[in-house]
Image (tube, rainbow, N blue to C red):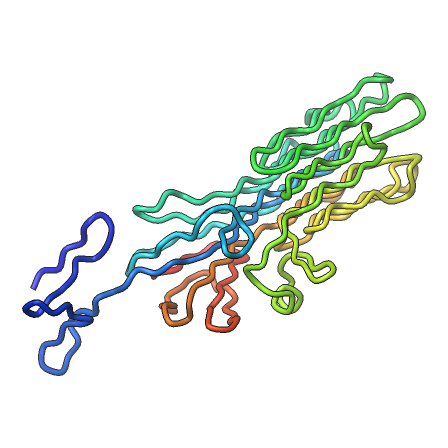
Length: 327
């Protein structure tokens, strides 16, 4: 018996006028009729590396009813969905080239690829192998400075699906390096606001705070879960610490004298804090991909060792590395 697949769903199988849910030969199941089902998702891309400006966050793409702006996709039986998780950008200050965060995506035959874009790298200070202007990405990297060009401003990069980086400036006394943009659409701080903080990330409800805390996924703050916080820009004169945005954005410590910064947090897509070491590799935060479906539809066919969790009648797969899911 031949069973054909058309462009939208598996062809139905009938016995006379009755639609069958399965086909048997004797006692052996030959072919179950597979019902398509919706899958909700959240994708956080990798956060950008920083020069002295903060790294831009990876953008966050998600579905309703879990707080996003687009609809779930309909999974077709036996189709393999390939899941890519973006790594955080990385490099060594003063010696390394540009490194935006990596993209995260879900793709399959017949499915328009769902993609979130990696965060832009923060701008450098003068005479370095990267631009002083922040790099564009899912969220823009913060602008750097030029201590030899007093009064010059360097803009942050633009965000394709998030906030822009803040502006960096040195006026002979004040040093302000732009913060990275956040996935909520919040721009990074800069000279316009006298702050170098990173932009706030985006809230999701596709998982709960217990799972987020126990599995180190996203950043929990006051009962909400954030992804994609911008990295803080390096500063002087406005306190010792500039804060990264909620959603894993790294902080930046005093720019003058002893200075250091935080990497973007893993599994958040947060941007790297500005300044950076001149001898140690620093990182934007890695992203993650989360898919959620009714447990009654969950096939159990997966690769890449995602975390498998349950909320009520739903099963959630949390990918912190690339893998597949077969519906």
